[in-house]
Image (cartoon, rainbow, N blue to C red):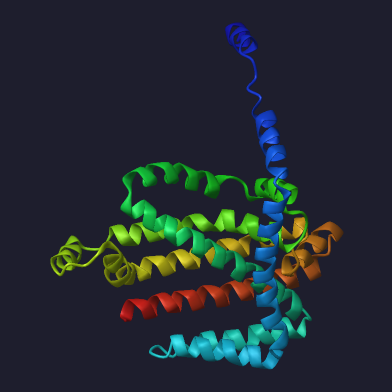
Length: 289
């Protein structure tokens, strides 16, 4: 014990927190760059919300059920259709519809950005061993770091509101898309690659006509996981001003209001199940095609 105390006492503390604070302060200087990102992400978010606002609630329910029926037309999953109908009616009846669409907007926006960034990174990992070595620990860091930690720099760089919540959700939800894209492309049989080479295909032709179509199942599984992780950030993002069902849960916790907290949480569960089943159905459809 004495020896350990002497050894630890002789080693100076690493000023890690000071270094990170200095790095964040340095980033804050680039106000124009982060304002541009804020406006860009905000425009995508507002576009989704505008669409959901102009669609009548009854038509939205009909469209969701019609989409579910179309992607499950070979299985005719009537139980899921009944669940969606009753679940969305319940959200409407509880006066959580606007909150639900705000939550859906956050999930769709963060999932879209995660796909746009994650798929090219996954392709890069599959094509370059060096890129895989570099990106793997970064993805591990992104996925294992507590989600609350992302809120601090997000607020410092992007302010309060939906945008920092979306940014934090993108960072937390992007790794599955990158990993599954990488895995899907690497699992393409060598025989197909050799056949494409024998026909004189370029690298781009092999990627878009052979590798990505075959990797669609893995890619869609990554989309499903990223979407679920984005939805798991809803309550956390409400702490920095992101609107939606998470705000209702957050306020209910602060007021010790079990009833409203449970009802808002139930609405999140209904939305999560609908999104999960839809993306899983698209995966099955891709596999059959």
